[in-house]
Image (cartoon, rainbow, N blue to C red):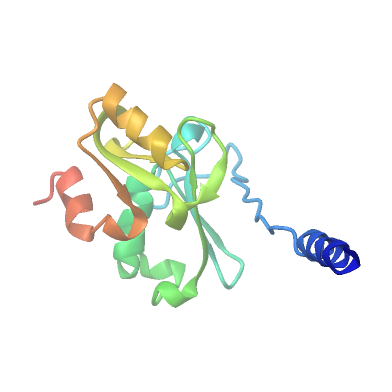
Length: 163
C-alpha cells in the first residue's frame, strides 16, 4: 500500500515538475508597418497579418499568409532583407483568421480556395485548429485544407495568377 501511494505521489510530482511550455507569439505591428511583398498597411486588416522573425532580430511583416509564403519560397527576390535560406528564420507567425491570435505558421492549417478574400486578393486562410479549419472550408467553399509543408511555390503562383 505504501509503495502504491509513493508511486502515485512521485508520478504526480513529476507531472507537476514538467508543465507544458507554450510559446506566446506577438503580432507587434503599428500604423507604419507595411507588407514587404505588397507594400500594404498591415493594421488595416489584422486578421490576415503574418510575419517572419529573423535570427538577426529583424521582423518582416506581410499582409497575408499568401504574401508570407511568397517570401518564404523566394526570399532572394527581396535581397535587401538579407535572407539567404530558411536557416535565417527564427519564427514564422500567422494570425488565426477566426480568433485573431498569433500562431506558429508551421503548426497552422491553411484553407485554399475559400470565398474569404484578403487585401492581396485570393489567399490562404490560416486557422490553428484542424476541425475549425475543415468547418471553415465547408462553410466558405474552401477547396482544400493543408499544412504548412503542403503549400508549394507553385500553389502561391497559381493563386497569384502567375502560372
